[in-house]
Structure formats: C-alpha cells, structure tokens
Length: 281
Image 1 (cartoon, helix red, strand yellow):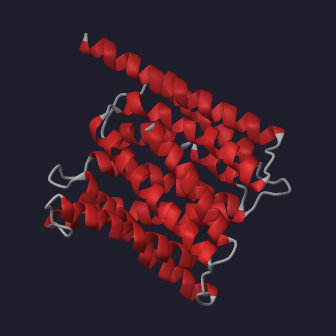
Image 2: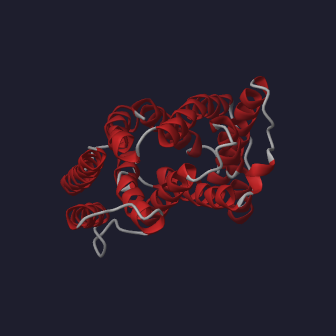
C-alpha cells in the first residue's frame, strides 16, 4: 500500500504537468489507453483472457462506474487546484471505505469510530472552507473523486475471485478512455502533444500501472483495517512533490484539516483492527 501511494503521488505529478499543456480529456484518453494496453500485455503474458466474461458481472460494472467517476473528477481536480489540496481531500477516502463497509457489508462500527469518521469529514470541511474565498467547484471535484475511489475500493473486495488483479487493472484504465472522450468533446478538441508531454504521460503510465497493481493486491489480500492506514503516506509524498516541483505552500487551514483527517482515519482503522483482533481471540 505504501508503494502504491508513492506511485500515485508521482503519477499525479506527471499528469498535472501534462495537463498544463494538453486538455484534461486528452490526458485521460492517452493515459487510460496506455495503461489499458500495459495491463493487457501483462494479462496476455500470464496466459489470461483480457476480456473475461466475469467483467460483465454487476459488481465489476459497479466498480467500473466508481472508477470512471473517481478518475474523471480527481484528474480534473489535480489539473485545477494545488496537488497538495487535492491529495489532502483524498485522504478522507479510507474513512468513506470504513463507513461504506458498515453500510454495505454489515461490518460492525461502534460509536467511537463513527465519531472519528465525523471528525475526519469535519477536517475535510476545514480544508474546503465553504463560504470563504478560494472555495469553488474545483475543490468539490476532489471530493467527488474521493467518493469514487472509495466506492471502487469497496467494490474491489467484492469482485469475482476468478478475475485477476491484472484483469481488474485493464477494466480500471479502460474507464478513463470514454470519460476523457466525453470531456474532450465538451471542452473543444485535442491538441498536438509535445515530446515533453508524451514523456510525462508515458512516465505516469509506467508508475500508475505499478501503483494500481499494488493497490489492488493490497485491497484484495490484506485486511482493510491493516492495510488502509498506509494510504495516508500519499499525503506526505504529495506535499513533498507539490513543494519541490510546483512550489506549493499549503496554508495553516489545509495543514490543520489534513492533520485532523489523518488522525481520525488512523484512529478509526486501528480501533477496527483492535476490535477484530479481540473477536478472533
């Protein structure tokens, strides 16, 4: 999970850089197409079917829908707002996963964890600062992306076991192509990419494929409470890259809100892990 988070932060950096030159829709099409091709080659190398019939099951289609929404909204967000801000909002995804696990899978969540979840979302509101200058639709896109990724992670755990992690990767990246095509049609058309933009997209694809595979393995083979806390390392990587590459300096409210979200998430997940351990004993 830590390796996946480092990879996603680097991927975001390259996508944000490419989006400075190319329309976001075009970035999604190229990134999704390259990622889908990369996973398809890995699937064929293992002798698996790229298009397994299980892809059309309800769970996988729901997962694809969440993937599409998460990728579309979050890519727009990192193109329009500071990388640190978008990544800070994304840290609420583990809290949404725990809440979703209670509502969808019937996992037991006590009042202490529900209180921590509420505190975490209050931290998100502190980062967003609704009603103040600087609050707007771009920041809400990061929230929508966070919800999409949380739904994807929940659906990943319910995906048919017959589908490998690589096959799920093909599905995930494939969703970016139609999303990018719709966005590109609405935004006015494509542009000729420069060698630098192509290199950035290629680097984002290579790192993104590796990170996506690592995330899928972590969510399908590890306990949610054990692996999910390590998602918060993404914020550390994003803050470092935002400062070093884009010269970002998060303000006090963003740092305070991020600390609240991370503290609430770690408490929620550690509390769940402790409860699970007591139940096993």
